[in-house]
Length: 167
Image (cartoon, rainbow, N blue to C red; front, side, top):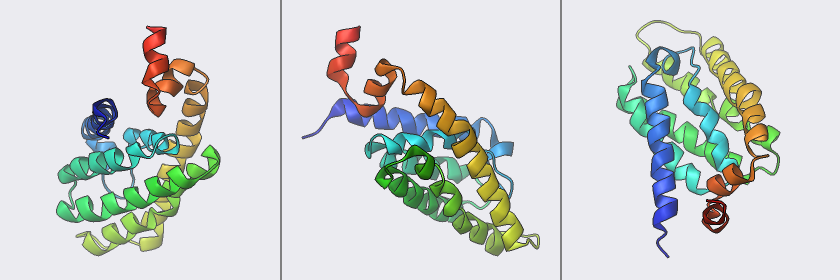
């Protein structure tokens, strides 16, 4: 059945990802990336609907990338695989590592498309480190704190019945 509330929630998450990435472009593109929006990938741990919405958000944000359509394709692919694995993980700490694991895809993209000569291992390490910092070291504590709030937990899981009762 078509659920407009879930679709709206997914659309909002995609839009927030895009806005956060585009408002800090110097942090979101290139060999050293600290995309604040990447904290949101942990939403996929709680509900698979965020796999599609965050992949779409990444694809739209990557339209502004210096690598253009290639980043839309490969960056979004890396995000999709990471998000899928995050959703399949049973532990949020393990889930938070997947974006770093699949950042070699971004490393390959930068290695092959950069106009400057780059070291694949260095670029990949930099992106892996940034993903670990943003998702694991910053994102996990934020989500651990937020999920103690039943309203927030019901909101991200789509339990609108409980939310409406609290309003």
